[in-house]
Length: 353
Image (cartoon, rainbow, N blue to C red; front, side, top):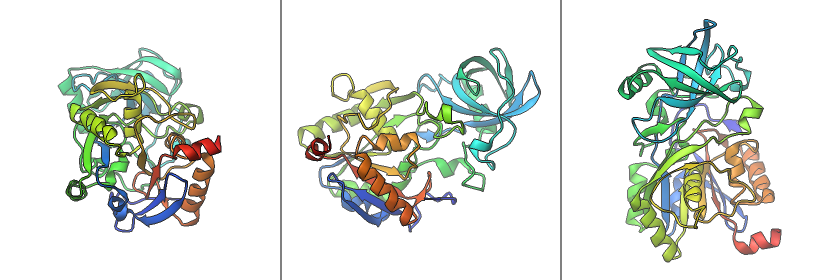
């Protein structure tokens, strides 16, 4: 697939590959997404806004330049911004491919990092020399101000121009908690949401702190996604109950929504309002309890996002879909084209078992 290199959220020529519940593949303009929806469907998106989570600065003990990419936090609370997990790179920036970025200097607990006006202390190494727990000094409002002043969106080399924060905020962005954009939501705008409601399709949101998609290190990438806090409003939990009672489809806009809903239902099969930490890794052995279909970006088979898609379709179907994406030149990454995949029905699952 071709990497989308222009930071345009809703290009007119965006395409959509469709995989139905029997594994049949079709192609459409992404603007036709609403035509795939039925009256009574429930569409759920992640309304997290994206943090300026990339911070350049200095490793004080060595004097070496570093880039810190914030990757996780304990909760979504606005005051809970002192402690983060983070991936640390050596000197350089997004113009170099992530896998080519140099390692940071040797990091140890107690090391200080100067990141613009912010100062952070490494509390511990998280079983990998580049993944750390760090703690910012200062009050929450000072940390927020420092992030706003000195942080940039996390960015990868396939987009050559520096991203502005508004490039990575979806049209429904609310609380700034995501480390990278929940980019499946780029498909939406307020016009499409209005048309959904006019057609009897319910729209709702959850909030999940979408994590980083790549670290450039194969061992560390295998741990992705890292744990992600989320919140499900009572209105969304109620909409899910109504959809289930009426036998209507629940459609997730993005892998982050699937993670939140399936984690919330992992204890008793019900989605309750409130918060939690999505710490599961969904894949081919996962039995989806809530989500019937997903609208997502296109993903390479070695990515954690692709592994989640294996909960919706079997490997044979996904291989055919990937071949079609490659052959027809679909664009990948956050500003690329999209896929719509229905959960395979039970008869197909049983036949494949």
